Length: 366
Image (tube, rainbow, N blue to C red; front, side):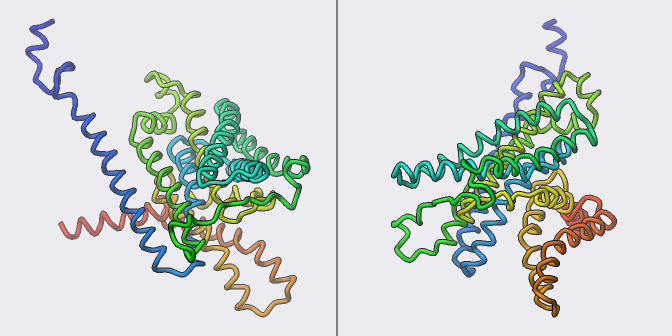
C-alpha cells in the first residue's frame, strides 16, 4: 500500500496537502462574496443620498421582492421544484412581523433591537410552514406539486380572513416601526432609513444564498434537478435535499414578506393574493432561472410594472371604472406577453441573454 501511494503523483495522493486547494478556493469564494456584498452596500448608501425619497422607497421595495425571487430561483431553477405558493409564504412572514411588533408595542417595549427580533421570528415561522409544505412536495411531481403549492397560496390568505379576531380580517394589521435612530440626525429621511434596513437584510440573505449555491448543497440541488435517479445512485438523499431547498426558499420568502410589511407599515390578505405568486414565478423565469442576478431583474420588473401600468392608464382617456379595471388586469397581461417574448427570444431569461452578449463581446475582443 505504501509503495502504491509513493508511486502516485503528489496531486493524486489523498493524504497530501495538494488536495487542499479546494478549501482555499472556498475561502476565496467567501471573501469574494463578502467583497461584493460590501461594495453593493456602499453603492446603496451612495444612491440613497443621490435620489429622491420616493426612489429610495422603490429601491427598498425591490430589495424586499429580491429576497423572495432569489429564494424562488434557488427552488425552481436549481432544484427543479415548481412553486405557485410563494405569495402565501411571504404572507406568513408579513403577518408574523406584524403580530410581533404589535405585541411589543402593547407591552410598551421600545428599542432598535425589536425589529431584527421580529424579522428572525418571521423567518422561523415561515421555515416551519415551508418544512411542512416541503415534506409534502418531496412526495409529489409535476402538476400534483403545482396543485399543492397552489392550494397553499389560496388557503393562507383565507386564514387571515377566517380568524379575524387575530388577523383583523380584510383590513389587516398595522406594523409599528421605530423611527430612524437619533444618531442619524433629527431630519434624516425615513425612506432612506427604509432602504438601509431592507438593503442590509437583503444583502445578507443574498450573501448566504450565494455561498450556499457554491457549496456542496448547491451541487446536490443541481444533481437532483438534473436526474433524480442518478442522484439517488450517487448516494444523495433526494427527498431530504428537496425539503432543504424548500425550507431555504421559504426562509427568504418570509424575510421578503416581512420587509414588505415593514415598508408599508401594514399587512392585509389582499397584498398576498394568488396573483402575487404568479407574478413571482413569471418574474424569476423572465429574469433567468437559477441565477441570483436573474432574480434581481425579476424583482425590478415587479416594482416597475405597476408604475408602467399607471402611466399607460393616465395616457388614455378612460372612465374611472374602466381605468380601475385596466390597472387590475393590465399588469398580468404585460407579464404574460413579456414572458412569451422572452421565452422565444431568450430562453435563458434576461440574464442569460446578457451573458451570451458578454461572451460574444469577449470573443470579438480576443
